[in-house]
Image 1 (cartoon, rainbow, N blue to C red):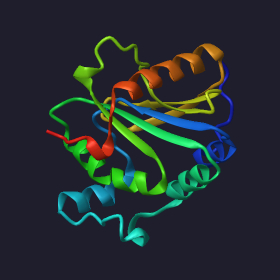
Image 2 (image 1 turned 120 degrees about the vertical axis):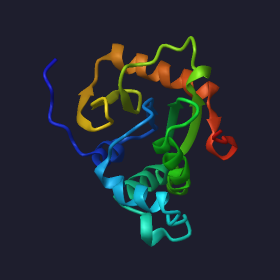
Image 3 (image 1 turned 90 degrees about the horizontal axis):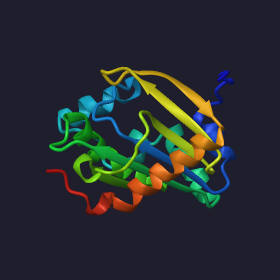
Length: 176
């Protein structure tokens, strides 16, 4: 399939009218933008949600704007247990996602048995456009790819709905 030019995430989210859902299935991500926060978390110095100036950024603005327009922004994370260090860090940062208006749920991988999940993480915008994320084995982001095929959008929507139904809301989810 020919690859079309990738608009920035914020632009895709700004075009949403109903929903933006994100499925994450990896236990490790190597995201340069998170290095400072990861170091602060390891040192026990991660800024709390009350100190918005220390952590609020363009991503949070995009989510808050979308939620303000009535778009449901949901994220589901399928994780291995016991959790990796990165997942523990991600769990500690999730209140930031919630503060921006995202709804986040967690599903331990052993509770995902029987679900057919895609090989890649993705965002699904309004059930019509998938932004697939390609990662290397070490969690390094390689590229994204847009996909509007009905077969892909339908399957991505079904996979997300199945995970969402089983997953536990962040406020009730405790890492072991």
